[in-house]
Image 1 (cartoon, rainbow over the protein chains, first blue to last red):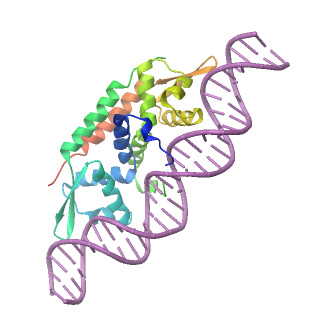
Image 2: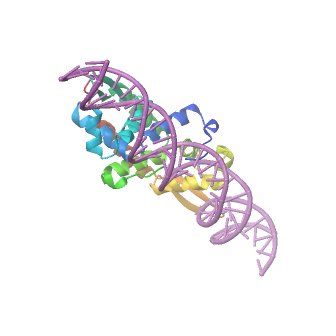
Image 3: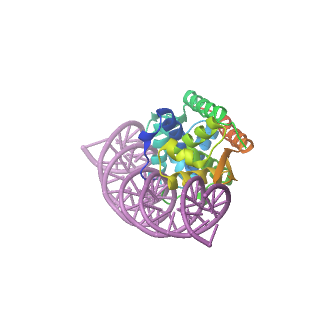
Length: 107
Length: 107
DNA sequence: TTTATATATTGCAATATTACGATATTAAAT
DNA sequence: ATTTAATATCGTAATATTGCAATATATAAA
């Protein structure tokens, strides 16, 4: 990006935008869908499945963790990344509140 | 961004990510909220309200238009930008389908 | 027609994101 | 203790986004 002046906006606006932003990359959408379909996940699967380098997948997972959408548990040598359903629902609700309270029209 | 390999993902994944991405900036969230509150809008209001330069606001409006969330009508010397409620609802539904079909957990 | 006003576009500098190779870390297996 | 395997982190190149001044465009008013 560039010089994003986040201090100009409310915390609510910044938080909302952050949720949207983290979901705003097709690799992260794909990662979430894959984890959801598997009902179990280790990261090495994702590297094959998504087709990006291991370092890149790891970075995307980190961003998804940063807003709490994923939780990771150590499972022996690997990681088990799962969707945090509680947080998932909370964020879905927040986005819906935004959509529902921001749709009046004028023309 | 960097080298986003959009050809690796499905159209659905790319579309979803694009919706999220456009909403993923606090200025654009703020613009939508302001337009919604006014029930009428001319762009010059936004420049004062949001506190970014006119060129910057114009650019954000363009991105919101790019996914159809805003429609603009010429109104004399100014523009009347409004939320396209039909499109708004369509996108909200698409995002909810994503949330609802992507939340199974494993751990 | 000229002037004033509103918005869009262009060009550019600053910053952020993405991707990946190389390397570090961590835990299991030998 | 060493080796192997899985994931994280670092460093960096390529590209994208943001923001703004300057300028172009378009419409209304004079």
